[in-house]
Length: 546
Image (cartoon, rainbow, N blue to C red; front, top):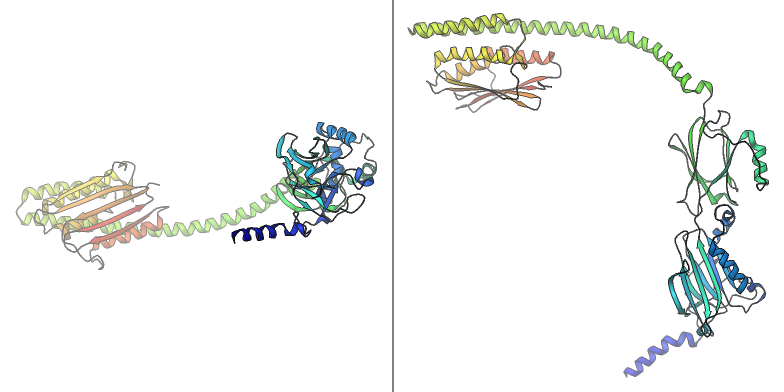
């Protein structure tokens, strides 16, 4: 049973060959888009064995470019000599990266055992060593005398630009090469021949129709084209027969003004018309090799009244004229604004002066009450010390009453004097800390802004602590901000309730007024109290060190 299965499988495999069915190996290639190259002997001898090379037909349009950009190379000369000797070889250039197909005419299944083929790159690198011919097809194109018939398929190959593929067919009995085909993938970079202006149309037509004649026409300076030379014809080397073969792009001052497009003419020149003045870059390429781009830079000078100097002069005059008008308007507006700001500032300063004048009597009144309290207690020594400290404090406050801000070192001295006085009454401890990064001599602070906060902490927080009270005043710096914190361990209060203290009201009102006149700075405050053992008032001087 197993032998029967093997026999059926073998019959299925060889049936197409027995029945003459053909196996197509080239797929569905559109041969109408390909160009065939074959030996000249095919024209007169339909029995001649030779290699047929098929490349894309659009390559045919670029053959004449070889006359300009690619002079014959050594291997081409060798190939031509071989053609003379054997008369059955071909050589063709291709300009696209698509593969070339190789077929052998008059080698069929019937005689394929008599031949073998080899494929090499650059004449030395073996792509396929000498191999049996075992693939066949019947392409639909003509090759000289007689119909195409069945041909041996030798494969399709491609190579980098500047490289060539060589395919050889030889007889097995004597190793005689009966046919050879070479395809080279040629890099073509479009190059500029000449540039013509509208004033040189006669020279252009002469060059176009009699390009082989050597002329000594004057060369145009592309970096100094006159404003009237704004219609230009760029003649490229080579020969173009269809506008779709060549694309171009135009940039002005580094910006694209004409994106890539097909040329307007079925020829090897590009005609740009009525270009405005500026610096240009023309780019051009062949569509078969868009990665290879030729370039030409040129500059069209402006008309005299479009020149930079004239524009600068006229622009300057207009700018001066309108600038004077705008300046007058700005000055009048600024004067009016300054008057309004001055009045506003004067009003705010008056309010601040009133607040400061209210703070001093309030402070003096509280101090005198303290002295009276000490006298009533018959504490004559403490009362005398209080009077001595109070006189120093009073002298400092009266001296600085006109100053809105004081250096921090002086303000802290006044606050220390005040706390020393209050210590005589209520027996508490206090500490003033200043971060090292704060310069106490250069940093200023609104005068007597903190004193009501300390007074409030002593009077309402520490007065009932009986020697256990602690007060902390700290100055810290975070980036460009100064953070001042007044905290005590006395009984707290509800921070959400409106304070009834006269001194605190004056402080917060003063802060609001100061924020209206401070430039690039702002003072913010917050109150935190847990209503039991902590009260903390924080003042944040934003951008105080900026």
